[in-house]
Image: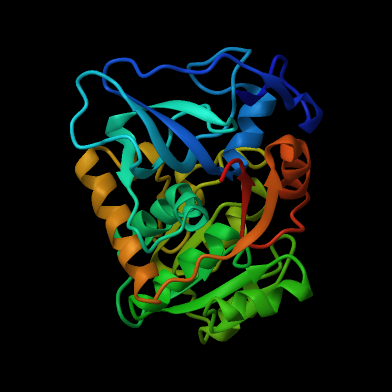
Amino acid sequence: MRAITITELGGPEVLRLIDAPAPHAGPGHLVVDVRAAGVNFMDTGARQNGPAGLTVPFVPGVEAAGVVREVGPEVAGFAPGDRVAWVYSYGTYAERVAVPAAVAVPVPDDVDDETAAALMMQGITAHHFTTEAYPVAHGDVALVHAAAGGLGRLITQLVKLRGGTAIGVVSRPEKAAVAHEAGADHVVVSTGGDFVDPVRALTGDEGVHVVFDGNGETTFRASMQALRRHGTLLYYGAFIGQVPTISMRELPNSIKVSYPVFRDHIPDREALLHHAGELFDFVRDGRLKVAIGGRYPLAEAEQAHRDIESRSTTGKLLLIVGE
């Protein structure tokens, strides 16, 4: 089979397509023919710095959807031919991968492979953000950074589904329409911290109830200033730029800061099935739209990384692996 393999850390050029040994299903695992694999900022961080717990060489990518080819010992509830999606199991930039059955989610017949792959990382993140890390309530005002991106668009839609008002921040004027299409009530164009005054003006100088900020150090302090008293900042920018450091004395207005990591989104299989199941239901009844911003053959993984790092894309980027 073919796989993208990283033999040295570095820029997008280190992503190399090679012929690799086909995996086999060991105890507790499935072998899956990959149909679509998600491209995430997390993948670019792993490419540059190495993934936790792995050394080079490795196959990048942690989310995908596909068809079960082989079921290993000690696995119940899956059979060859089943359609599944998963997240946080490395090796998805490949035609075939061995996946722990514990992280595999059955995909409904009326949800296509691309949508399923696109929902696993960003969809579960957005769902956890808006239902548990900060349960958005009717009347809440949320500030969503990168509102035209794959995750930002999903957060915006879920804020609206829960009765909130969404203010989107985008980096370029041409992205404003994309954020509005996702449901943002207001859109601010900003590439740094100059969104604070427009946001406070939109809220009668009170500030927002919650900020979803994945931009890293460049916006962290400004996001704090955009919050109202007792507001909440959800920071998730560990793979983008420098990690901000602050003193507790810097926190204004008794705000709360949360750093919800992905392992806390789905601490067990029950949580995984809950988040994924509700997202699939939202897609099936038309309440949640998943926008695919780019489709690339497996051989063009390098270009997919260049595009996501350029910040010029909107929506979810996917590697289309098989049919």
